Image (spheres, rainbow, N blue to C red):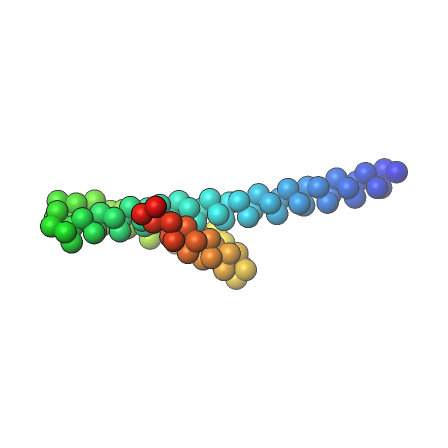
Length: 97
């Protein structure tokens, strides 16, 4: 009986950890995408004639690039990087919405 409870507990813990890892990837991708989307929106305004936003757009793009590098270090396995890339593309698809 104790062995069964231990096995069930281990399975439940593993399921929780895997679920939280997936949410972390999606959350991290959303953070990067938000910065990149905002930088793109500002750059579009710059291209439309508002040059005063150029510096702010560049800073946001730089922050997004730094955060992306952090994510590459955080997700060091090929499968995690693939999941992150897919989540980032999905989030980037929501730019401007």
